[in-house]
Length: 189
Image 1 (cartoon, rainbow, N blue to C red):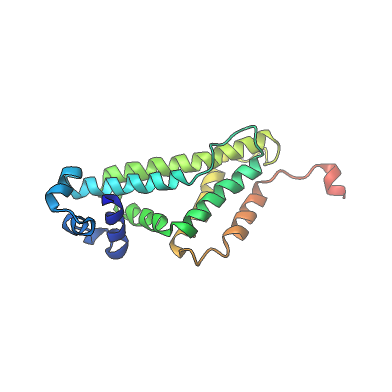
Image 2 (image 1 turned 180 degrees about the vertical axis):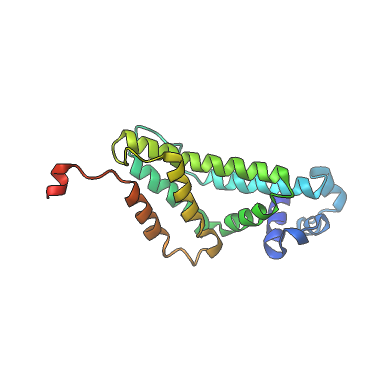
């Protein structure tokens, strides 16, 4: 409840206007009770970062698996992110707000960096699986390719649930660039 109230206030007024008293009032507790749980604004913002990260992670599909088709896994990963933008747009909006504070909130920066790197690594793992399955180009560098894909898809984060019409066309174009060239027998057809 505390993290959710703080997230709502960050989205309504921005990080700079976040006050612990306002969070306590939103939750319906006194400031002393709030400070029992989170002793400072820094701790409060770290809690928001952690719970936002955890909410995103809860929406992700199972971990990459070499036994499953890579393209199916890549699409499932993107679908989970798109679903989060549609169903929980406040998470991406809060993530963007928190990113702006990372220069002054090192704990927040660490949470966001760890999450971002882990999320990109999931894509990189899927791309590496796809290389082993000969679905993706052999010369593809999985982690840079993952950064390219997640970077393009996160551009939809600030658009909200109504701005997703180009999500799949963008995904499809990027994925097409990752695909291995068809075999000679296929290209003749």
